[in-house]
Image 1: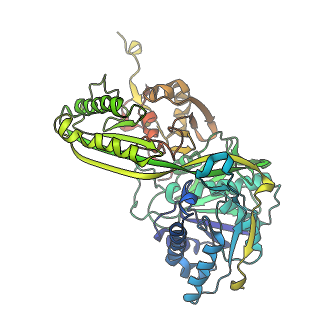
Image 2: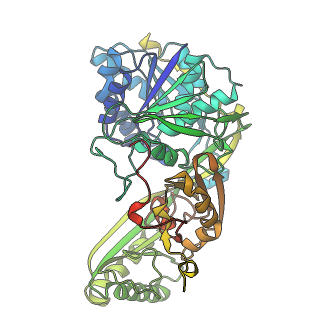
Image 3: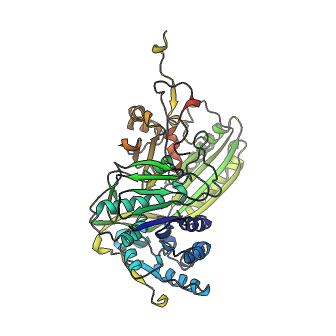
Length: 430
Length: 128
């Protein structure tokens, strides 16, 4: 019976490039069909990738991920699937082809389209930058069926990067809901890379994790003839235990019985797991329900500017002086910019009731954050903030102020047929 | 006063459970997972939606819903309206709310029966 093994080589856009090579090396220890995925798209990434500069950066990123692992992948016939195509999957696929040819590597490159939607100006005004649907795994399956060794996608749902190869290799039907859910679970658990292998888990006391300077990559193994999903971490530091898997299982989950994806509705409320050996966990009991009629969409909207300013206070009365500085600023802004409503944090006492606490931190920073469509508004607040040096409470120092462009995201839904996931093969790689 | 009449010692949730915070839009979720399944019933009784609201009383979310997963000894708390309008517009220092899991895990609950000393609990992580 066919077995398919999928490793994760990245969990976010700028993950360590070496993880891809660790993942590929780990895959060579498994028999069967082998895939490496890189999950590289955050909510805002597509907005940032609209400019010429952003498009260049997304190409450089895709190639840098491949550079680190391509030789191991080619030598061991490991196929690669990634959403590092960002806002232009075909363009990135072409650039990858160029890179491969320069290195005398002959691999077929495919790409997936269908996520990009026309920007509806009437909805979000002139500021709408990009609108994409979270499409499913069909296009990945089509590209693999056409012979692609590397599949470049844009905004597919993160777990679909794993659903694609599982459906392709195990010849699943698009109505085998439990099997689609199992593949989705595999994708959900590995798409954040090392986060299931002891990354983002360590704490003092009993949550000790060895080898975090070079954690291993997770591998999900699914076979055609049984309902088990096996997760393992054969190489590298970190740990893969029922505890690390449980944290990742519920990560970014709302109702555990109803996790919506474009491919299937996943129900993890009845999942069981056990430690089948060191750094290996076996899961059963994932259920699937028919996929929703609609797909989630995300519209990125230009949303002006955000400014952030901070000032430090030291000593036993640092908290009192930070609170004093905040009051002074608020009084000033009531006079000068009454419409501004900045947010304040006291770093060092974020969740303490500062008016009613015995807690005396010796080192705090007052932080002010504000947003506006007009950069000048932010500058005005910065001028007031900087004046705390000479006009504020005693002993303030270390002011830092930064301004950055802000992109908002607006969620929506479209019907499945309005954004169809389609896979293609780049002709020049045939 | 006999030992039975003494109020139960209060301990932070994190002595008995671990967890992780995740975001989606303006919604934050925090898992609370028993280190040892034998404490799950105790955690379920004490780590309630009300306790979660208390933890975030200084910056209250719109609502809190708890989901229970008995097969893995875990609960999932979903806080709506907890991220200042959503990750990309949130003005708070931690836009994703990733640090907030520990605000809940630091909340105190009564020690379970048989609790002796924190150094006896929780047991070593399974599988290590």
